[in-house]
Image (tube, rainbow, N blue to C red; front, side):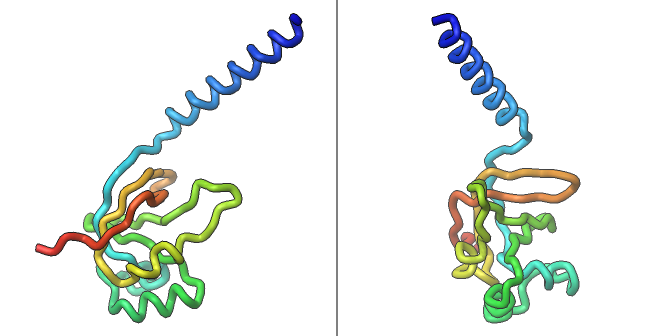
Amino acid sequence: MKTRIIQLTSLFAMALITLMLYAASGKKSASIEGYVIDSACTYTKNLSKPISSDCAKDCAKNGSPLVILANDGKIYWPIDEAMPAHGQNEKLLPHAGEKVEVSGKVYNRGGSHAIVIDTIKPAKTT
């Protein structure tokens, strides 16, 4: 009986520690507006927006990861929380080259930004 109580107490303590680490991990929910653009063009051509939707789609179909180039110039890498993780091009491909609004959990590490996308929709035009 004592062994069972010790096991349950240990399990509860591990769950509590996991939740505390999860809360302290620095991730937060956010909404970001920007362009879905090919990552290579974003860096090598220093683009502020995609050349065209077809160009972004062609690069993505050839394996180049799509990213979100936010209005403030930050680049957000779309990531997956599942393990093993899956690429996010399939989710972004319908919006390649377009301005979108994405919401989800944002992670920042070493000056890099990533987002686990919960929703993606075309940005409102003014």
